[in-house]
Length: 446
Image (cartoon, rainbow, N blue to C red; front, side):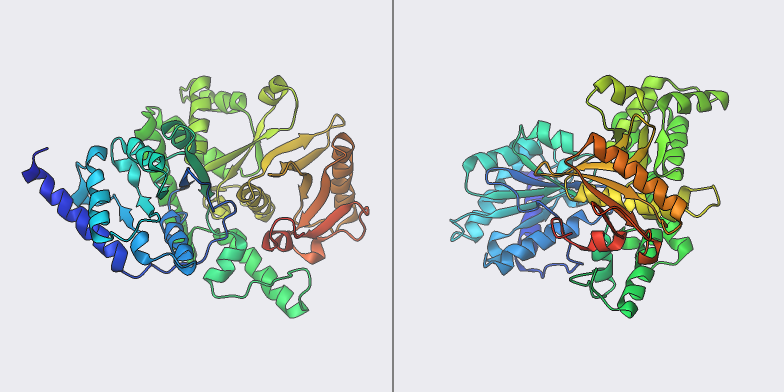
């Protein structure tokens, strides 16, 4: 590219650099993201579902460094999704470094480069690796899930990335977004405060956690969420992976999002589509599932087993990435609060970096989640909206006890929708509590 053609790109980069070093940081609801501090020598890569708030979170990370005393001039931010930067290549990004060094010559002890939507620049990986290899600067990158997925970061940066998944608002984040107080000890609050928390919790389960969906009326919110799903289907799956069977893909998405927390079998889904005259190969269904997980729209949970073959032949459980998607796609007409509750627990376990499976015992009992924490701690979690009925309580607790016999080192927990939904009695080794108490407490505190 000639200097004459390159100059407009340079001018645009200079303008964006100057704005980032001077303009006030955008305000947003503080996020509680575990493991977001990164590691020396690795790029922090924020990944997640579209519209979950990745850009706002990036500015939060900048704000945290400002609070720790880092000068604003050492926190440049560039959003590459700007039409003025169309045609920019990674080989030209060195100009950005030179221009910053010229403007801020005193920044000798390191710069934190914040790159948003960097995936639109061909060859961006080589540029980031060069920055990391220099050993002086820190790099934080974010991007749409269409072109910056976890496995691609690991491949592109050759092990030089520290992945930070970002999900829609948790319950605590939604409360803060609404200006409400998050109790420090939700298990020890007044009856009036508990009633307010339980009402807010039920609302959050229905609304979900996408930031733009907060405060919208039902019709507007559901249209917004449908649009999110459509964009994920078209851009993150169809365009990105060249999927040609769009009809089959839409059937799959409607089925998964409309049957949250249900068992899913590729064989049964394939047979159902075939009976409806929709031609699709089983391998294609498997590929579509992987694509939907990659773009964070759907989360799949395998059965716990030491045998890989047994894991593969048993159905998986499917969950949306956000509870707000459930009422948009559920056509059963039944109350789906139990499915939403189970979904909320799974997503929170993923936030806490747990590896999650479900358990089916030899006797046929099932436990919703078997979670392995970052320090290899294990926990069996049963989710039941209302376990106050003795027969229901007996069934849920019996399943937990049967699973605990197979996994004796695992903590046992039963989560309900409200305190009134707890069973009258439970074994001493089972922790029983409302799900919102567990959600509001940091890991290790409950």
